[in-house]
Length: 246
Image (cartoon, rainbow, N blue to C red):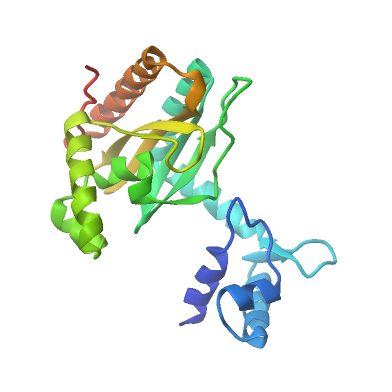
């Protein structure tokens, strides 16, 4: 692999469950010689992609990555507009909200809005989920054609079951999950796009499984559908399917 591919591989090791790495960690997890891992991480430190933690040999993402993440969010009118909507919904219902994007077969949150209820779902920023195993991921995948799904997933047994799920999401206009990615956590998600930039994002609300009844879920879905519909109208998203609230 090129040095850029290796650097990307290192950065993708970081997650909500892995906040720091040593040279030994990288060498083991990427199956590369320790000397190569050391040279790679030094180059990443020199460019600001990584920084050491105090006087230790532990590394975390560098400030340049933080700057780029902020720039990425600000550079997208769609993410900015959706962030305003999800922030309002999070405050209204007290549950955590997310804006997520698709990255090949994974989905990752690019903005989160912590809930205010005493019992709420904590932030998952930095945690990557399999797209086909999450409401956010499926809401975005449902915007793709069957041919695009087949090209993305070569496993025919998977694409068969996934195709059925996505067909239902296209009819309903939203995706839902119940204790799927995380035990005790449910989610509802709606995807919108910007035809001008070809961006597609998912607006999602997550909430504890045991404290929201059917009526509460319908109220959140109604509000989420209204917010997503307004965004779709503003951006001319003709592919948007208004969620079926029946």
